[in-house]
Each structure stands twice: as structure tokens, then as C-alpha cells.
Length: 458
Length: 123
Picture 1 (cartoon, each protein chain N blue to C red):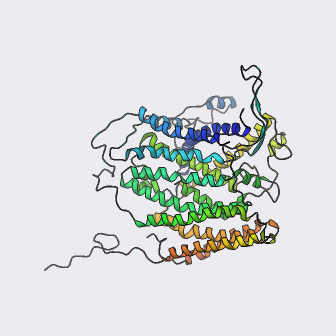
Picture 2 (cartoon, rainbow over the protein chains, first blue to last red):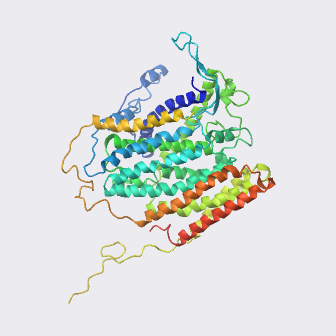
Picture 3 (tube, each protein chain N blue to C red):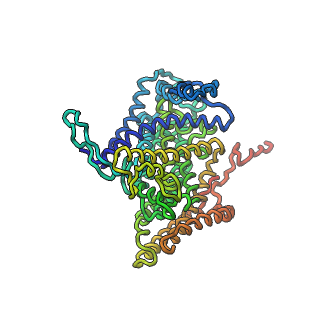
């Protein structure tokens, strides 16, 4: 007999891993579609597997509407996957073989494990499972004990730290892959990726720290969502308390995922392909699967801290639909009837997934709208912009939380956010930049020192 | 309770390793002298990729360590600080606050020093 939590965790893992892999394949497809919409072209539309859409259009009587693009190229993700799998898996003879082969796996494993603490469906009073009577040997026995469960793969109290820790392992795959490639482009890409990812981890960590302080010292992802999902003044989403932090955190996610405008590690105009120059076939694709999974995990992280997780609407009593159909009891737990509880959990899961999809779309929108940062601008933004700002925020937020009357520091925190934003706008340009560090040694042919014309020889 | 995560880890590892093995088995394999050279935009490679690089990356890594360790120290403090009851509590909260502000001050001094030394200049 399993405990309820173990069983639910297993089910969540089984469902979400598969959903994640499917979603990743179709995110790449969506990315190409978003790119084509941005650039006013059609995008991939020739791989026309219908997936049953033909019948659907015919049933709805609208099959004349989509002349020539009935299926939107939905087979593209499948075709891409098969293509990548049967391409030549080439390992160049000059690479460090063990690391070169291990690096894609090292990139994709943390990405697949990192979402484990995301609370997809809140709390559920699980009724237990009993085998049907006609099943031989175990008929009529209770297979899963009833109990209160958290609908997540890993219900721990330090969930936020878990996400931070596991997602920062992602840098290993990129760095080892880049170093093992024994290629100058890869090496430069790896260096840039390391510097970028470690730099943006600091403001990210400080963001999480301030959110932990704001939500009364909890690092539990499920509890943090519950705190935001309450009614009235208690149930305020993080983004309404800390709008500036939300923006900074989103920037950090983009940088951590190596997404444009921070895709310095693979900037194709300068570094060919960056860290994956020497990779081919599925090994190459694993890096991208990892990137998209990190995007999903990062968006979910953002939802947990700032958008109230599975909470449908801010400021109001939540779980509207489940309450209407009676799938939630007075304590806010989903009921103990299996079907009712399942409906409520799926409703929350859907809300969460919708928020994640929205954030993913914003990431793609940003990628195809903004030009890439230069490396010095990137590092300046982190070290001279975000980190001092976050340290100041930490100081002010701590003071507000300590001295706020009656444990209601939310207005004070909002004021701090606005004040720091305008303060940074005013003070930022006036900060000294520090002494110059590059001594410009006159070098023949260098862009810093024009070639000295040779004096007329005797 | 944590057994389920073991299953997840197993799935992740088998996905990563399985894909690499599968693509190795399914794809064609053709080797050649020129194909084996390091890709350098079609030129013959000049020198090795194992070479010295800008010391700035090293400094970034060190500064990162400083701040990351600092943030790690902050987490347990953040978890307990809000539960101490503020100024109306038994005075512990004030003490915790002052100590942590001192700790923050040391990091700010280090940060300012690094700034003045030009660590954060990239040009």
C-alpha cells in the first residue's frame, strides 16, 4: 500500500514529464510561428499532419475557412524530432570524448528535474484508491491510503531553494560542452555563458530572498501560492506588492535561459553557434530541449512568486469553478470524492499552465523584438545596475517589514519598489564608472592605435 | 515520500542518455580527414583552443562566489526574521536586524571596493 503523497507524486511526474516533452517540441514550433508573425511571413506550414483537425473543421462546418493552411504545419515538431534523431551523430576526433558526449545529458537532466517542486494543483484531500473486486489477488484491497496531499512531485519546505539550486546546475552542461569541443568559438561561447549565468544568479537569488521575506519567511512553493490565493487584502499576488522585482526577476530568467536579448553564448553573428558549434543531431537538440524546459520552469517559478500560481483571479475568492461544482470544501481543500477533487486539481493545473504559456509567449515576443545586448552592456546591466538595485531593495524591504505597523507592510513595499525604480532612473546615469582598466598598448594594426606611418628611412 | 523524485531522476537520466545512444545508433557515420578538423569558418585552424583567456572572467567568478555565499547566509535569516514579531517582540528581531544589516554593510563595502578597482568595467 502506497501513501497518498507518494502515489500523487508519481502520477504528477508521469503526467508532467510527458506533457513537458510534448510541450517542448511544440514550443519550438510556436517559437518559429511567433518569429514568422513578427516578421510578417507565414512560417512552417507544409508539414500537414491533420491530427484530426480535418474532421473537426468538417463537423463545425468551417472547413472552407482555412484554404491552403488547414493544419498550420502542426506536423513540424514531429518531423523535426525524427530528422534530428536520424542525422549523423558526429563526434570530431579532436574533442575530449567523454565530456563531449556527457555534456548534452548534463544539460538536459537538471532541466527535466528542476520543475519537481512546482505546486501544480494546491492541496487535495485524496480519498484513497481501492482495487476493483474482480481483479485477481488484490481485489477489494486498498492500494493507496487516503490523506491530505500536495499536488506536486516533491513536497518539501525549501522548494524555492531547490529550483535555484537545480537550475544553476544547467551551467555545467554548457561549460563542459563548450570546453570539450576544443574549438575557439565554442570556448568563447562557454566563457560568456558562464559569466552571464553566474552574474544573473545574484539578482535572482536576492529577488527570491526578498519574496521569502515578504511572504512571512516561507520558502515552500505550495505555501507561497496559498498565501497569494486567499481572499481580500491577504490574497495579493506578488506582482502587486513588488512590480519592480517582478520585472527584474523576468530579466534574470531570460538571462539564465540564455534567451535573446541575452543570448550571448550562441550569438551566431560572432560565434557561429557558440557553445554548440561542434554538436550535431540529437546531441545538439538536447541543448535546445534543455533551454526550452528551463523556460518552462522559469516561467513557473515566476508564476509561483508573482502571479499566484494556480490562483485564477487576484483579490477575490479563488477556485471559482471548483466551488460552483462543489469540488472544494469550506476549508479550501479539494473534496474527498475522487472525481470532484480531480476536476478541481485539473482546473488549477490548467490555470497554472495558461499563465506559463502567456509568459512563454512574452519571452518569444521579446526575443523577436529586441536586438541582442553587447557583452559589456550585459555585464554592466547585472553588476552596475541590477545588483546594487537589489541590495538597496533588500535593505529597504527589510526595514519596511521590520517597522511596518500591524504586520501589513504591503503598501510600504510597493512604495519602496516605486521609489527604487525612480531613484535608479535618476541616480543611475550619474554613477562613476570606476577607473579605466584596459591600458591601450599601441599595437600595430589594432583598432585602438592607428598604424604609425613608418618614418622615411634613410 | 522522496521515492517519487528518484523515479523522476531516473526518467531524466534515461531520457538524456537514451537520446544520445539512440541518435548514435540511428544516424549514418562517415569519417574523413578534412571532416575531422576543428571548425573555424572554413579556414585551417590557427593554434589550439586551449589558450589563455581574459582574466576578467576569473574575477567575475570570484565576485560571484562572494555574493552567492552571502545570499546563502541570508536565507535562514529571512526564514526566521519575519517570525520574531517585529519591534513589539522580545527585542530579538531588532538584534537580528542590526546584525544582518552589519553583514550586508560588509558586502556593500566589498562591492564598492570592487567597483572602485574597475572590476565592473567592460570596455
